[in-house]
Length: 494
Image 1 (cartoon, one colour):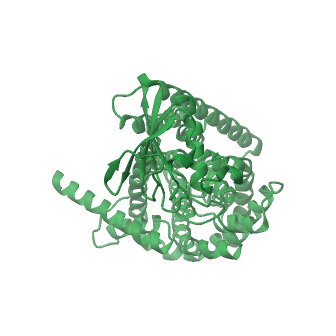
Image 2: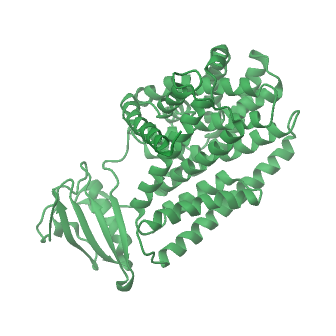
Image 3: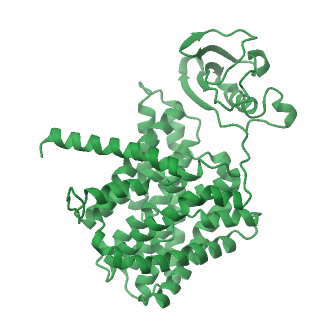
């Protein structure tokens, strides 16, 4: 096929995938179903008839896409929101995942007559929740920030331990040596997390002090640092997934120039990675093999959904102060997506007996239970009597460094539901050293006066010295959440 035809085909495919996002968003479904449907349509059983059966290439491309998706998840995660939930998330992603793996493995060994190695592989592959699916669905629901933080952090942390188990089981025959495997996991997770933090901290330190010639270079540098941490960790036999998530989390929450632009760039790259990943997995699947695995997939899926996930959440979150409703919702919201399917390619590459069957079962589980869980999450939130605890959306603040003046230029957008709407400039009471210099409203820019009232949709340019920048951002957030009397309500904007 000529280059121009490939370019036309690729751009058309991406545009169709973008339209599918809109449809899946309105239906409350993760976009992975639409993308995998496109892959099945293009595949050997569809009218296009493209054949793709290179499992080695699929594994490499799948892991690369997961690195990008995980990096975006770390960059766009607000540390202030997830910090209270990190201990519980670590417990769920380690102890909880281990409990889930054991329950699923024992159940499918007895119910489906699987040998122990394949049973534990199935349990391990189904262990991690999917970051892309969790982020795309849960961030649209009005849920308590503690619960959202728990589920987001869990989906970021639980890939790393499961990858270690799947690789070990795929490359070793027989039952695992628990002590040996535990030692490997502790080292790899600890080393990966420490290396990711170090690279993220050093990268943020450097980017704050180096004035790059173009704003578009900052997002590229941040994403490159996160991806580089994966490679560095793997070279040191540490967990690359833990390293990339931790480094991205550090970089995404550091005081860096052009943070919203960086988040937007990371989101765009992650969307491309998702489109390519899910379409590829749809191409890799063999539709003629799927019907025979529907019954085993339903058995394993319902064991995971109704037994393994609830028990693992209940036991691993004991002592963290979660209500019964929050635990019940966390059990139902453990969405599976691309990660289990990508992990299922590892046993195929290693020629594990029964790996093809394993892949078909996992693929079927992801499709069927995403259709079951995704649209029912709003209903589950209502049944669990969960409500959001944020009154207004976070402000979108862009920053550009003014190196010679030792100051920053902030661009602040007033959200539609923000209580900044109607507040006059003097009522903001910004700290000394900060000033609103320009407002853009309906395409027209003007210099505001002290009595100018802000309106939803306004874009403000705020010049602030470096010393009071944090205080300025806190004050703007406080007023956005609680209005001009935010201080009286105890709102500090943190």
